Image (cartoon, rainbow, N blue to C red; front, side, top):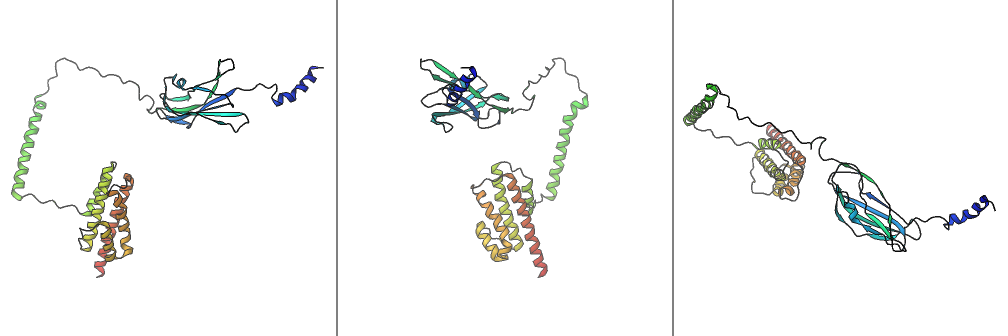
Length: 310
């Protein structure tokens, strides 16, 4: 029989797997993210596809062979039938790791082995993916800075007499000015500083730094108080002992539910912040302060129009 005829006779058997070499197992590691920063934890997943009945040994200590990778924790492995083929199984395991160096980095991999019939260990090659690790510092920011020069021990340069006497002259001038101001106040008395109006207090809130949570809470308390005082002043009332809800109901009876609705809604939005149930951002706090100023100005204009009409 010729070689060609022999190959044609063996070809169907090769397709059925009688002569085809069988792959013992295949393994790969991949990350749950494509890019991250230095020191940011992520999940490293291992998938081993193998024949059912084989028990692959996974040595996680090989993950820390490279000191630029840190293992933060791991999970138990699981083995389930592989839906990709009959007689196959899939073993999965995962770890929480982080990279200590930036760059396009190949993922670390554990060692995967099988026990052969003779008792020898067979190592399975693990295919490794890569992730992009971004540096936290700007380029060159972590480079050492040059040291400054040492102070010389030579004689200090002599300053002129006017430079040496300047501090004493300034102190004497300050003393004279303080005495003059004290005498002037004693003659005409100290004027009482007028308290800021509610509109001025609302305007001052917009200039404050509201980045800290306690500042945001204080701003909501103050804007609710200033808004109520301004509206009470415009209406000639002072129901100071009422809660925000009671005050809103009374305002609805005084000027009508439609006109009082925007003010009541703003006070209702401030209530959970005042009592610690919500923590809005400083942008939301500034918007509410601006809204309070707008409503206070509108209430003042409406009261002026009503007085002119009367």
